[in-house]
Amino acid sequence: MAAFSQDSFSHLVDEQILASFEQTWDGLGRPGTWWTGAQRVAIAEASRLAMGDGPRPIGVAPPVLSDLDRVDGSGISDLALEVVRRVTAESGRITAIWATEAIDLMGPGRYVELVAVVVLTVPIDIFCGLLARSHQPFPAVIAGEVVGGVPDGVAGGEAYVPWLVDGWKGPNVARALSYVPVDNARRMAMVSSMYDGSEFFEMVWSHRSLSRPQIELVAARTSALNECFY
Image (cartoon, rainbow, N blue to C red):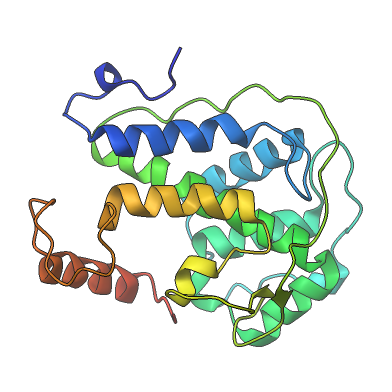
């Protein structure tokens, strides 16, 4: 049974959006490249809690990353939980120094996949909330070992994390999570469903109720409100 069926919403939702949500939820509890299915669901659960709690009040100092437990048991470590909170609810406070330390402590693969799980699930929760739909329960965990492995052509560059370098064509945001290509493909499917459809390089869009300038205005304003530094 589909997790995101049309009749689970009180408003009509584009089928492409529903398909991208379904694809994300189907992969959430499965073993990833660097995290197990149980750990991926734990990351999503921690992110949902962080969204509810919001950012720490001004003046409350976050913990020192190097002081946090880095041993992963059946769930995720205190270090991973702190990174989830920062990425989810305090992204405006992410700096190059903080990101470098987090990546060094966790390893680039785990860091990038953690970010991928957050950015895949948060938009779905927000979308459901805006349409007065309850959050979708997290899927059952599927046992199995992580896949591992670094994609060919990945290297350090202008981003905080390694990404595809050789032969890349397209916007940088599209390769932001290319260290974990399966999750990045899910993310781009969601971006396409909600944003450009299949017409990113066309300057005039006719497949949306809003024109492209109107959509870009909404995107820019949203980025500013979220203190996005991209």
